[in-house]
Length: 108
View 1 (cartoon, rainbow, N blue to C red):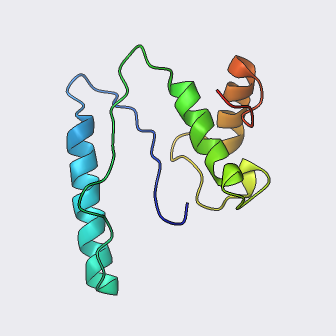
View 2 (view 1 turned 90 degrees about the horizontal axis):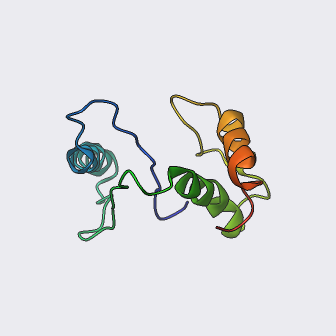
């Protein structure tokens, strides 16, 4: 998105700390962005949340995939150049979402 970012990150170790990850990611990226462009990257009060075990990560992934479509930036998620995963290809993510709740363009 033009003015915000959505990340869905999964901790794979027992001692994974989502809040620490968010803090470090914002600190690191903010430092280098400001150093390069002389402008702050992050607003002072942002919004982040940690999903609990009972929350549906597929619903969150569906929301993230559909966000650039809702914003009118693209007509299909695969067209958005800043969408992706270091672990899964976008086609695999779309396929899993389609298998569980219909195509990712649906709300819900």
